[in-house]
Image (cartoon, rainbow, N blue to C red):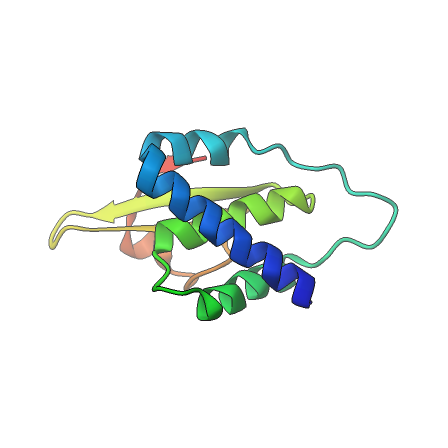
Length: 125
């Protein structure tokens, strides 16, 4: 688990770098282009454990982790472990708020399950 949390922490650092120095479009491209790895003969790591690793890495990160950063990192980590995860970006109009989360087969993984009821989805990757 320690190795998984450390890899998650590095993904948080990588996604922050992309957001800060390359911009949203590059982050979106990187997440969208991340291939879904083929699962080997060993037992796959459950998606809940991978999301938990991202949550723990967020606690140990050196600054607050934004929802976009956390969701991008979670999506990349899940895809690297063979899960067909998607990063979802939504917004509400009044009052304006935007939010990002990670889904697997339409089920919210790293946030409250009612995110689709609160936010209008406008992008998947």
